[in-house]
Picture 1 (cartoon, rainbow, N blue to C red):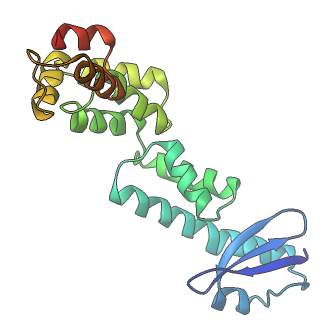
Picture 2 (cartoon, rainbow, N blue to C red):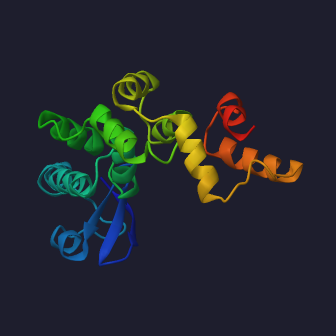
Picture 3 (tube, one colour):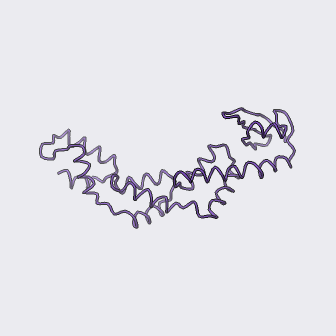
Length: 197
């Protein structure tokens, strides 16, 4: 397999691109020990050794490190690993490894997010947040049903108090401004109107 390019990155790393589209990232000491340089030939057995001995274990370790800091959805973890220069095949292996140990759980991650933010965000906003994190709608709906205990009217009241909104003396412009603010937080127009009028 011909080394088409060797692009130096930060921290002594380089992205190695092979003919046929395969690419991976190695540290300088690693690629030098395999004699990898632009235009050189990388034997198939050496390529397989690099993937199984260096790249896959490194990707697994990176995945564990990312989960150590915070719960993540599978989609989010996949995206982070791809950003790190790992191929789709290697990412699949790492995700399978993580799943074997139960470290990746979209429902647990969604439940944690809901419990943490339900006192400051509407149910709809929480759903939007979780969809953005790559969690499926059916998981979100199930977990919201189980975990969400917030009272949206009380939450709106707290936000109005925090914004120093005076219902009695509010002008049309004040009402429009606070309405837009609350809609941005994901509250329905019915819920907002019940509280601000």
